[in-house]
Structures are given as structure tokens and as C-alpha cells.
Length: 91
Image (cartoon, rainbow, N blue to C red; front, side):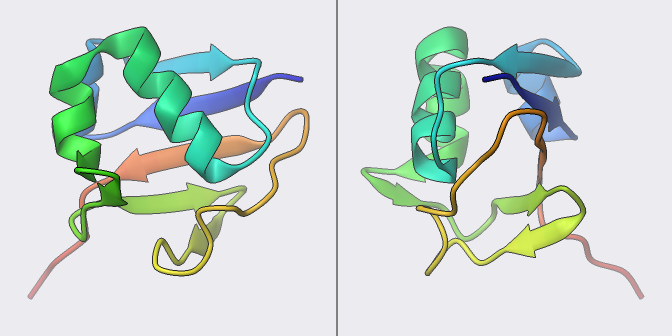
């Protein structure tokens, strides 16, 4: 199973890459943990506060927003594309 992950803004800086492929993830939570294992504590600190996902993290799976408060166990499938970025603000 291959999940493509695209990083934006500060997450891209922490990972040091624009995108990557993770092969051993069954849901959003296991994907995020695999990313921390691959890219290290700097990314981990930006994603998590302890074991809880930070409110400053937005996750999109195949163009649809995932509510981190409820959907960290959102199932992933082969070929899914996950985007990770800070909240969008504007004015």
C-alpha cells in the first residue's frame, strides 16, 4: 500500500521535502506516526502535543478535510493522497 503525503509551509520545512510516500499506514494516525519516525522530532513537535494532534494541523485526504478531533482513525487506501498544512486564514 502506498500513500502519497504532501507537506506545506512549516511542515515542508520540518520534513525537508515537498512530498513522500509511506507504505505502512492503515489510517491517518498511523500515517502521522510513520512520518514522525521517518522525519524526526522536529516534525513530530509540529504535529503533536504529546499524543494529541495540534489544533494548528489541517489534514486533507483525497481533497476532503479530515476532522482531527474525530477522524484520526480515518482508513487509508492504496493510492490515497494526504496533504498536511497549517490552517488557512485570510481576509
